[in-house]
Length: 425
Image 1 (cartoon, helix red, strand yellow):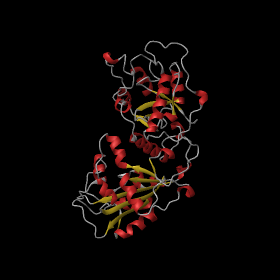
Image 2: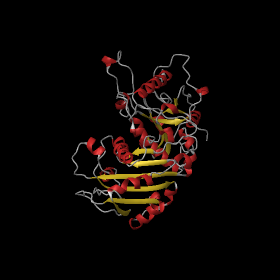
Image 3: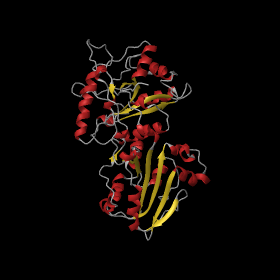
Image 4: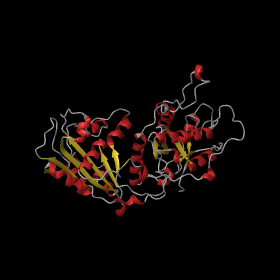
């Protein structure tokens, strides 16, 4: 498959699909898309779900997209006009698979991009923008780091490692690390009764225990743990086959009122003074020399970085998110944006090239506020580690503040119902 670097928006504000079948009515297009059974639309087979692309912009707005190959197949089949202009891979922070199991699911998703009527009194002075249910809060909001894109990057990584998607479809060259990637999941459990200000706790946290899982992917998927077919009684043995899972209990530490001993990890009791050396040994990993990237999963990145740094670990080159691990291939200029040579028909997707250019300028503005665009390097120069803050990702997913502890977060995600604290579990 050719690497796809240009994408076409389905439904919504100045979408490429506007006017394909019927003006102001997406139902015919939705029926046509939902009926597609070719491998380009359903890689898993005719009975598999429809696979499209979800793009997250630097501002946090999202759009459902077709790849260039999908767009050409679709427009040729139904004798539709080929859209002028396109989104480029470089416009997005993340490109990830999005699946639809029925026409109703596709219709429900695209309905969230429907534009609301503009205020009649402000039409002459108000700048047109995406005011849909899905995007109005992001387009009009302040520039910030959008963990929506970080969340989607995790999904893309998971699907790549599980060999469920083709990297080329999402503007990626086949990564050299697909055969091996190291993941350390670490949880620092603090005394829950500690009422000090966060600034004080960051400088001197009251640690009680540390939970660690050190696993290698994709071989982890070959264990019952990774495949999701795990029986309770074999959980510990399976995890240990896929990696190392430890519950480090600190001697003479306080005890949380609602805590438990781990069911799924090996327990070790160590002193607080021994912890820094254990952490230095755990994180002794040379990603560049080994060619195996390291991903650190944590719950509260700021706290985790502080603890590791005080343990003598250089975290200055640790990178938040997976953007540079999944660098997009740049779009070729020879198939660049084309402006219209004649006035657009009433109701058609007018000034779409201007809209893309305006977005590019807005993207440049967001960089001034700390939101960096995706890397587009051909060769990945691995940082020491990629840090993934699960607390922030859950907040982005649920669109609300995530709980302070991992058990409460797991309950929110319906992974478990036991909210007692335990680092090893």
